[in-house]
Structures are given as C-alpha cells and as structure tokens.
Image 1 (cartoon, rainbow, N blue to C red):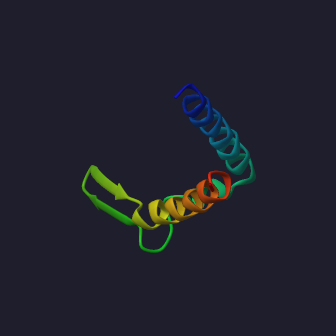
Image 2: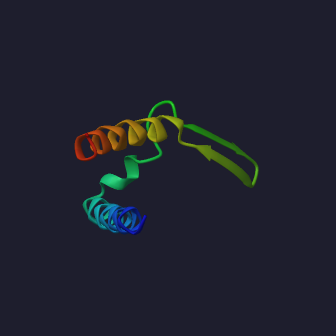
Image 3: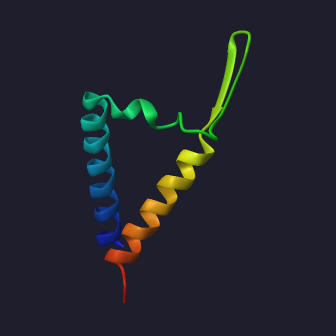
Length: 71
C-alpha cells in the first residue's frame, strides 16, 4: 500500500511538472478545448465538461499503466 501511495504521489508531481512545461510552451490551451468537449454559457454562468479530453487522458493512462504493471 505504501508503494502505491508513493507511485501515485510521483505521478501527480510529474503531471504537475508536465502541466507547467506545457503551459509555458502555450500547449495547455488545447486541454479542455478539444472538439467534442461540452461548453455552455448562459448569461453570467458557464458550464464546461471536457468529455473528449477525459477520454484521451484515460486512454493514455491505461496504456502507461499496462506498460508498467504487466505481470
């Protein structure tokens, strides 16, 4: 259990560092703004649900997990 928590923490740190690098390069503006992502604005209220972004992130994480945790 301790190893799993350490791995999760390291993954969060790496993801945060990647996010900072992508933000400085200007690439992070695409995250959450892909075709198929839902964004509704009415008056002063807005709702955003990045469904396509979530699917892409899920596929990438599944591939990474399968590579590292194969038995």
